[in-house]
Image (cartoon, rainbow, N blue to C red; front, side, top):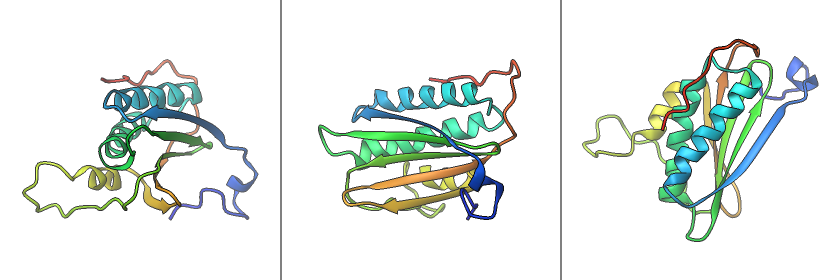
Length: 154
């Protein structure tokens, strides 16, 4: 595990940036969550891992909509940034625990969490009552003010 805020490291003294937004249980929310994340990363100057973060948010938000969010409820996307780490969290109030399927399955779906595990530098699930938070951490370059833009992709 990466030390996201461990005493004795410089992270302990750095105030993180935090952005959160709730999204309804609707397939359109996946694209909206992805765009929200891209805009946040651009604002923070963390564009080097933008494509990886965007793809992982797509998977986590889609899982929340399809499997985690009870009818009439929402999921929450949180982005937490420090100088060289970005953590994304998708929290829902549904039951169950996400399962990473083996790569040899013949199913057409179910590979999203394996993709997240591959792209992120750390990944996990935190249980709540009710629900859970599925999170991923990405090592990023220190913020820049470059003119490079990450495509929001729809």
